[in-house]
Image 1 (cartoon, rainbow, N blue to C red):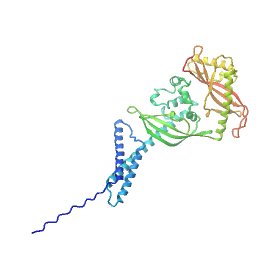
Image 2 (image 1 turned 90 degrees about the vertical axis):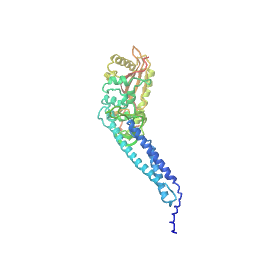
Image 3 (image 1 turned 180 degrees about the vertical axis):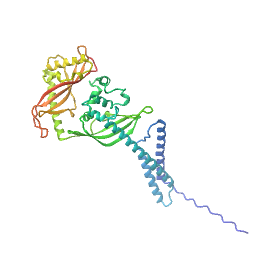
Image 4 (image 1 turned 45 degrees about the horizontal axis):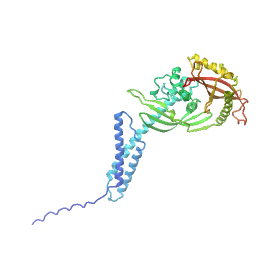
Length: 420
C-alpha cells in the first residue's frame, strides 16, 4: 500500500501587538493630512489662501517625531512589535505635507512682508508711501492728508482726495466730544510725530503675519533714528483685498495697534532737549494760569504772525470772528471765559537755536465759546518759549534756566461738536 503524502503542519501563529507609538503617530499624521486637505478644498472653493492654525506645524512635527521613535522601537523589539508600516506612513505624511506647508507659508510671508514694506517705504502712487509722505508733511499738508488716508481701510476712504483740503477737513476733521477731529488726532500720534522728524528708518525683523477676516496682517519692527532719539517699534500693516476681478490688494497702517514705542533711547542731545522741553512747558503752564486768571495783556501776540488764509479757508466771517476774539483775549480786554490746555506729549516739540538762544515750540488749544451767531471753536496755537540767556547744547546745561515768551500764532481752527 502506497504511503500517503505527509501533510504540512500549519505554521504557528505568533501574536505581535501593534506599537502604540506607531498607531499614535499614524493617527496624528492622518489628522494633519485631513486638516491640510480640508483647508485646501475650502480655500479653493472660496478663493482664499490656505491658512492653518499656528499650532498645526507643531502637530506635524510631533507626529513625525513619534513615528520616527516608533520605528526605532519596532526595529529593536526583535520581532515582538508590529506597526512598522503605520509608522512609515505616518512619518511620510507628516514630513512631506509639513515641509510643503512650511515652504508655502514661508514664501507667502516673504511676499507679504515685501508688499507691506514697499507700501510703507516707497511712494509709488496714492495708495503707498506712508513714511515718505509723513516726512514731507511739514512742507506739504497734502502729504499729511494722504498719509492719514493710508491709515484707513480702502473701504473707508470713500474716494477722498488729499489735495482737496476743504473736503478732507469737512469729512474727517469734525470735532468730537473731546474737541478734536480725526486728522488732528492722527497728526498727534507718536509714530506720526516721530516720522515727521525725518528719521533714518531701518527695517528689522518681521514679528508676525496672519490672515483673519479676509485680510492679511503683517507686523514688522522698524528702527527710527534722529539726532535726538533712537526708537524701535512694531508697525502693523493690514490689507484690503480686492473685491472684484482685476482689483489689486491695498494696504493701510493700523495705528490702533501701535499704542507706544517698544523702546525709546535719547541721545546726549536728546537728553538735553527733553529737559529743555520740560522746563519750558513748566514756564508756559505758569503763564497759562495767569492768562486765565488775570486776563493780562500779552504783547507777544501779533496777528501778523498768523497766516490767516489757512485758518478756516473759504469761511471768512468765522475767520474774522476768531481774529477779533484772539486780539481781545491777548489785549486783556475780553469778558469771556478762556479755556486753555497744552498738548500732553511734547517729546517731539519743535525747537531751534536763534542768536544762541534755544526756542521750543509748544502747541496749545484754546476753546472759544459760541457767540455773535457763531458756534464754539477750538483754536490751535503755537506758543514759542525761548531761553533768556545763550545756551551751548554741546556742553552741560546750567542748573538755572530763565525763559521768556517769544511768539504766539494761530495755526488752525475747528468747530466744536456743540454750538453753545
